[in-house]
Amino acid sequence: MSSQTHEPGVVPMLAASPWQMSYGERAALEGVVSQLRPALALEIGTAEGGSLRRIAAHSEEVHSFDLVPPSAELASLENAKFHTGDSHLLLPQVLSELSAAGRSIDFVLIDGDHSAEGVRQDLEEVLSSPALERAVILLHDTMNPDVRRGIEAVDIAAHEKVALIDLDFVPGYLARREPYRLQLWGGLGMVVVDGEHAFNRGGAVCDDRFHALFAMVHPMVAVMGEIEAQGLPLDRMEAPALEARLRQEVVGSRENLARRERLLGAMEASLSWRITSPLRELKRYAMERRAQ
Image 1: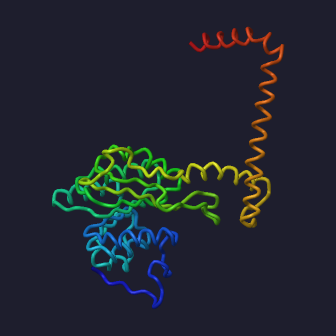
Image 2: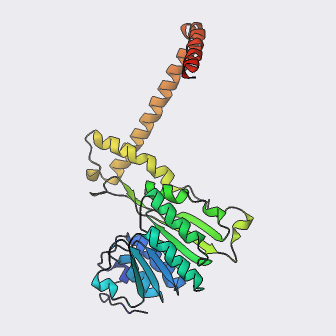
Image 3: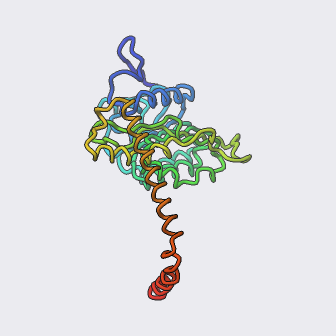
């Protein structure tokens, strides 16, 4: 196992580094790998190697997949093996080789192709591999709509070896600065694989005690965009002012909807609406026949 140095008195996960994860995400990943202490780990999507360094610090062997070669400093990690190229081509090959050799993967971080199809493919490959029978999978950027859609396209619960799913293991965030301003990113999802003790055989494997934060936050992004379009920059608004404005937008939307429903109800109850009802039905029938 390679040794790592860091600034005296500084927790390694908080030290200055190119690590792109938030501090909460770093802490969660560090906590998982430090308890798991993988004999064999995989990281799909390495970039500048922030998470790879911490995975390597707690693992006997880690395989890294990325489109670009590692830096000289990353390449010097003694217990890391680098696979440069498209993970969708390389990952199945490596998984097959590990399985054929009787190797068992203990930990996987999926943080590579952030398209919906790319995420779906990476997760499917990992879950379908015989080399994964008892492991923890972390998925980064689960708050991003494309990534979320890719994960949810996988019927994770159909894999009998899956014991637990939590897509909001660590909640994500709404970016405040360019180039990702007003975009949803970050967040860690967790999938626990345990072929011997999977408790999904008795029911759902999802932790459904809480509402999915993504489902509530995602619609608000459009509202915040509308606020900015009115000339009110969100970056200059303190939290209380922003909350008040969002409440105002929600209340306004409810009032507009209620007003439209009242107008529609009044229109449908009117004499003219009832009289012209046969004409509308005739028009609808004619349009349907024309479409045929």
